[in-house]
Amino acid sequence: MTTFTLPFQLDFDPHALGEFPASKTIIRRLSDMSAYYQDKAKVAELLSAEDPTIYRFWEIEQENAPRGLSFGVTCIYAGSIGSEFHMTKGHFHTSPGDELYITLSGRGKLAMFSREGDVKTLDMLPGSMCYIPTAYAHRTINTGADEFIFLAVWPPSIAHDYETILKGGFPQLVVKGEQEAVQIIENPGHQRV
Ligand code: S6P
Ligand code: ZN
Image (cartoon, rainbow, N blue to C red; front, side):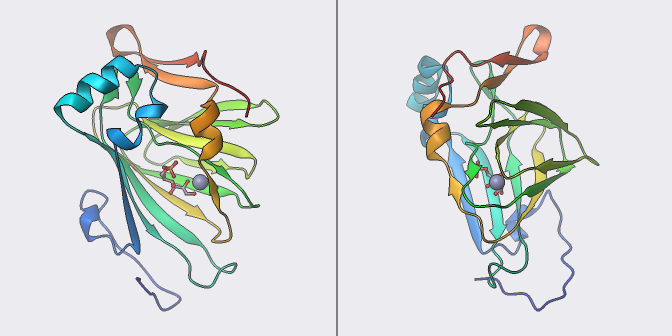
């Protein structure tokens, strides 16, 4: 477990995240995410040859919960599965706790929706910060040709609900259209869970 004496400064290179002093590193490969992509034939084809890494994230959980802030850096590698760009699983927070995403490198989208039916898709570019209210499920998508890297900051008291997204998906899909255009389309398979 990484421990820091408060207050502290942390300098890191977003392109050398292997050196990030995380207490937890999580790697999500295609085999972990086959249920999340629409094009099951493409998933099976890719998995028969290799198991590409879709994204990786490094976390530092605050040890004095509920006080303090937890934070982490996510890197989504460039690519797509069929027409869908590489993306995170996405989740709801199960206890009150908003979150900030600050883009460090590359470009992407932040897909959000609430159980009340509000759907938002925001741009994430270096220099932009997105605020995610507690009630919104959130997923990030790499829409560029390079690694998409962002910093996340959240209160340590929250737990993550992945089940709802696994069962019902997001209402929107971010896909590659004609001439590599980034398109946001309705997900025909989305179910309210
Ligand atoms: C945690 C925060 C991020 C994600 C990470 C991976 O609240 O939202 O650190 O955990 O971007 O996404 P996911 O959906 O696999 O947790
Ligand atoms: Zn979150």
